[in-house]
Length: 299
Image 1 (cartoon, rainbow, N blue to C red):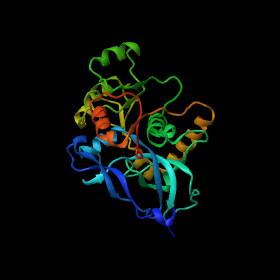
Image 2 (cartoon, rainbow, N blue to C red; image 1 turned 30 degrees about the horizontal axis):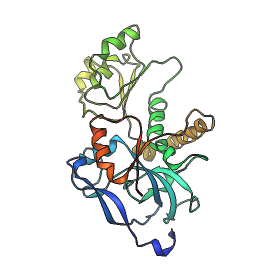
Image 3 (cartoon, rainbow, N blue to C red; image 1 turned 90 degrees about the vertical axis):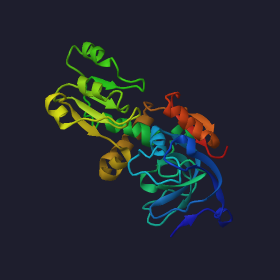
Image 4 (cartoon, helix red, strand yellow; image 1 turned 45 degrees about the horizontal axis):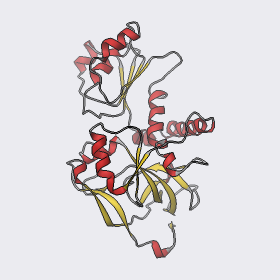
């Protein structure tokens, strides 16, 4: 059985950002008459309060996001908002009216469908906007550090910034006394990938790859046999949640514990009206943004 909010609002059209090609954010545009979605099996229908902006959104506008939709489509991956409908086959659903944070297609809109299994209640005392990042940014970071990165006390960890890795190798080698980093978190791609492999400790070092902001990097079997001897692991948090569900759920439990003890505080994203989404993505693609950004579908 599908449970929805009152029928008088069920047939509304909505405001949504529509991507019309794979030529980037310039072909992302606001529509004011997009059909409102309905929850499918296993889904919640969410009245979106805040839509997160991530580099994955930029990749998707360029057709570079693996498994991404064909244009035209409603943009966005991440949102927080209110449950206003419950699809069939949702086990132990949260009550209507509960505010949750989660991921799913079409988040840059007034309403979206969200897989119920990955939706978390917004922490008590937090706004929906403050909760953005919990199930994407924070869980990705935790997965990269712990189950994949196998971090332990005393490890040296290198986290690249978007500025790139040119000239970093000699500096990192000096700082580590020539031993290299135990773990490298690699999200920049082409500009830093060689540096990541060069500075990782031979044979015991790990490089966890979870993005490619500067473009795709390449490594050959010859490189791995004769030059670079670190372990390379790829991380896509959506695939991780699907293929390693018990470990993913343990990460969500740990996030709750980090919130409870004050390690993970509420976020403070910069909020923009929905219509400014294309500009925000252009700035993000160009490296001109700082911190987390979000869109308000109702502005």
